[in-house]
Amino acid sequence: MQGVESALYDVFPKAVRRVCAQHLYTNCRQAGYSGTAFHDLFWVVADAYNPYVFNKAMEKIGKLIPEAVGYLDKVPEQWSRHKFDVGVTCDHNTTNFVESFNACTKPFRDLPVLSLLEEIRSWCMTKIGARFDKAVDIGPDQLTPYATKELEERSADSRFCYATNAGGVNLRF
Image (cartoon, rainbow, N blue to C red; front, side, top):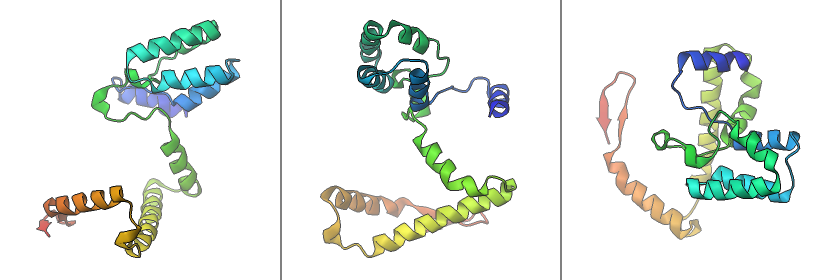
C-alpha cells in the first residue's frame, strides 16, 4: 500500500495521520519491547485522553524499558488519544473496523470499482435485512431498560426525519 500512502500525502498534505495502536504494539513486540507490564502501560498510553496520564505512563515505560520510549517518540503519526484532533470526532486508536470490513470484502477486491461498490451495497443490505428480521420478532419484554429508553427516544426523534428520493424531492412522513 506504499503507493496509496504516498498518493494520499500528495493529495491531502494537511490531513491528520494516525497509526493503529494495535499495529504499533505489534511493531514494539517485534522490536523486542514486550512483557505484561509493557503491554499494560502501552495501552494506558494509547488510551490516554490527556497529557498527564500519557506522560505518567510513558515515565513508567521509561523506567521499565528506556529504549521503548525513544521508539514510541519517533512514531510520526498520532497514536495516543490525547493527541487526536477533537474536530475529527473519532477517538478510535485501532483499525478493528477496517480489518473487519476488509475481511468481509475480500472476495470482491479484484472487481472494477462500480462492481465492487455494488457488491458492498448488496452485502450491507443483506446484513441489515437479517438484523431487521430478528428485530421484528423481539417483544417489548425482551429489551433491556436501556434499549427500551433508546428506542422510545429515537422513535420520538424520528418525526423530524424525511426521505429524499432519487429525483431530489423531499417527502415528509
